[in-house]
Structure formats: C-alpha cells, structure tokens
Amino acid sequence: MRKRKKILVYPSPQWRVVVWWIIFLSFFTGTLTWIIFYLVWSQALEWGVGASATGDLVFLFRKLTGGVIAALLGTLAIGAGMGTIVGLVVTHKFAGPLYRLRGVIQEALQGGEIREITLRRGDELQDLVEDFNKLLRELREKGEKLKRVEEEITSWREKKKLPPEIEEIHNILKGGRENEKKT
Image 1 (spheres, helix red, strand yellow):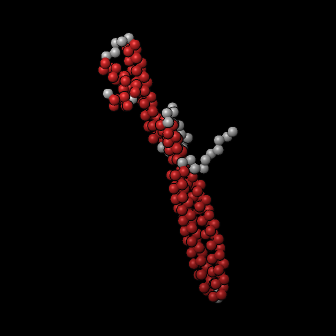
Image 2 (cartoon, helix red, strand yellow):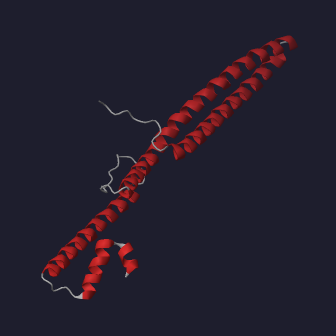
Image 3 (cartoon, rainbow, N blue to C red):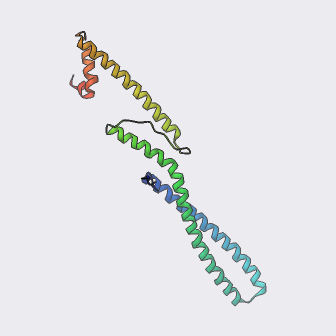
C-alpha cells in the first residue's frame, strides 16, 4: 500500500509561514488590481469628459466598478491559492528536515537505535543534518571504544587482576551516573 504524503509535515512552523505567504500574495494581487483599476478608470474619465454626458459617465463608472470588484475578488482568490502553494513548497524544504531530525531524537530518547538522516535533493538545512550525522558517527566510535574498555576490564576481573581503582571506574561505566553518585 502506498504511503500518503502529508500536506503539512511539521504543522506548527509551517502554518505560520503558509499564512504569511497567503497574506502577502493576496495583498500583492489586490494592490495590483486596484492600481490597474485606477489606471483604467483615470483613462476612462479622460476619454469620457470630452465625449459624453454625465449620465454616460455614471453608467461607465458602475460598469467598471462591478468588473473591478469581480477582478479584485478573483485576484484575491488567486493570490490566496498561490500563497498556499508557495508557502507549502517553501516550508516543506525546511519542515521535512526538522521533522526527520526531531523524529530521530525522539526515537533515541526512547532507547531506539539512532540512525543517520538522509535528506531529499533540494531540502534545506543540509549543513545541520551533516553535522548531526558527523556527531552521531563520533558518538558511535566513542561507544565502541567504551565497549572495548569494558570487555578488557571484564577480562581482567575474571583473572582477578583488577585493581580497586579500575573496579570503581568499571562500576561507574556499567551503572552510569547513578552509580557514580553512590560512591
């Protein structure tokens, strides 16, 4: 079964950006429509002043105003639609990597295996994810070294050649911070 794509990957930051894009593009398209209306109306007034009577100008004004209101509503709808699409596309470039990073961190906190993160081509925050993966590799190496030290200490303990200081260090390593506080 094919996995459905989510529209909002990481909703809290995405909603804010999408709403701002909707507001910005709606305002932009609305302003552009009013500028066009002003230019068309001013030209119509210049043409109408010398050629027609006042009644014709009122008729022309009503006709133009109705068209402009329809155009304004249409451009506001187009601006809102474009704002939604642009906002979603832009936020997916940031929200996807943040969502993945957060998921890996939560999985690690619950005791799961920490895996490296791979991003899609074009995603932002590549540097952050590369640094995270580098940190992860270094932590794995340190963990492997600690495991080898613990194995060596266990080997010494079995041979009864373990000095008390090393025994104490081994207990700290084995039991973590809780054991360290007890001693």
